[in-house]
Image (tube, rainbow over all chains, first blue to last red; front, side):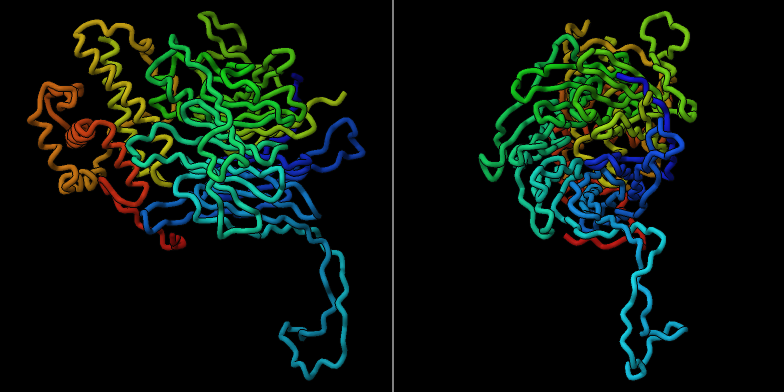
Length: 432
Length: 177
């Protein structure tokens, strides 16, 4: 785990709700509560400062989703972007999927740096000339122009989810993707918008018997027939699409037995998994529940291989966190490119990194003070005992309105993006 | 006894959250509603079992420390505002709810009876609190199962307590299913 030097703080007008690097790490997309997507591009290192990596600058901004109204159910559909997932790049254009609670959209982001000029079809004032007046054939010439980045919606995948979409995941076949809501998971083909296949349905015949919901789902990074989904009961199911059209029977079932000594009113809430992510290798997966992050070996179902406590000092505060709704916060987690480290967020704009090899962990803060240019981030510590050391912060002083729910790690380099409410921080490590 | 008080408090908080979540933008969140109902069930079971044992609650969940709410900024849960009145009136006229509510007042003694965990002896009840108490009685009489089925139904388009009908914004698009 290295010290990370601060690099950029970018302020959005709205609360950031998702952050995602593309496959090369050249582009970083953020979605916000207002339905907007902002894409940042990594600029090449400048020759003046070869010891620094390039910066991320705004590349494209567009409105992905608008608020809608479902007249049938008298429900407003929020425009908040729940997830963005990039497609692997196949040509000069970039494609991403963005989703709100009900509708998934495929966006094409392309550059235009040439314009055709020399038409003789219009008068000087812009009116179309009478065809009889045009006596010569003039072929337009492509002239350079200022770079323009355009985003256009290429596909709209709608009306397939009764409940709120919580996840989308692109399959390794690069042709299909899955979308998951509270009770169902659908498989789509990227080219087909009027049909999707339902592959998981956990809705009980009698809704009174509902005991768990789907909280997250992801496709395996290499095996296009395998996906996992997590539940509100703290379990993960791995399914193989070759086994049956409807994957109601899991191939593997991951669950850690509950520790009976830690039972409380809120045991069920804090065991609910808020995020599940495969490692890049495809050998492991990581789950995030309210207080911890767990790494699972796909070959071992009865318990995780590693458990990391994110903010164990909150265990005695659960009642208060229930009252102020913080206990329902859904934290995400992410792997670094080599799967040697994992990262997740906490409160007070703290985020945590765990090195899986050395078992060392670090707490850092995403704040304006820490983002002075080129400043090295100072590790933070929350004091749990009675005596509070200097520079430590006590649990009662934590600001629970400042929560880091969304973080992303560059697929290759040690560059991380951290979303703190409506601020995006990008941190890089020192190159020296 | 401490656990009993705690259970009552958690139940009261949960009910107000459940109620408030129905008017949330974006509609009822199934996951959140499920978690709320699980907490409510735990609290209700603990409350009733501690009442029956009439004494130390025994080997129940570890008591939570009395919370210093100053450590949790952000909105505290409040009792429902007086604007909730339309919902309450609909509940009265809704046939689904009417008879059980009446029966509950006659039934006594069993766990499903009108709960008295909310303080019943008050100098006076504020209008909001009166409605809040009636709503609490109604919800608990149904137990969590019935409450749960109504949540499920309301997600599919039928209303239990209709609450305020959402007025569509003039610029929004029609969404046909």
